[in-house]
Length: 69
Image 1 (spheres, rainbow, N blue to C red):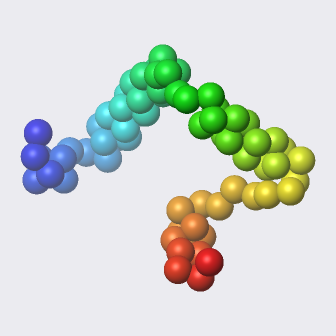
Image 2: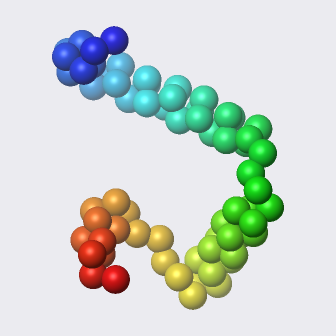
């Protein structure tokens, strides 16, 4: 499928395809062997968010911080 073909799809079909893709990616990710150091880092970041010591940003907010750090 080309980008031109994707652009022609109805929005409802695009959303359905996106949902299916995310589900497939999530299942594949759950089966992946991640190094323990990566798992630990993700767990630490999740804990910081849950404790209120860090916050999640949407993509627009994250993009605006790139280059300022």
